[in-house]
Image (cartoon, rainbow, N blue to C red; front, side, top):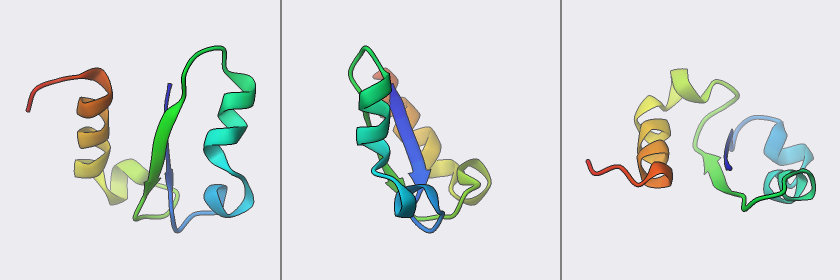
Length: 60
């Protein structure tokens, strides 16, 4: 699973996002914070797409 969250949002400030998902998931978890708030796709669409491409192994 790929977890992305905004570094300026509350999720990363309130929880350790990766550890939270690792406790709930049965498979591997990867991810990181992006330099934005809560609305990742609106604030950093290029970074979200780049993370998806890397996660799914797509060539750019």
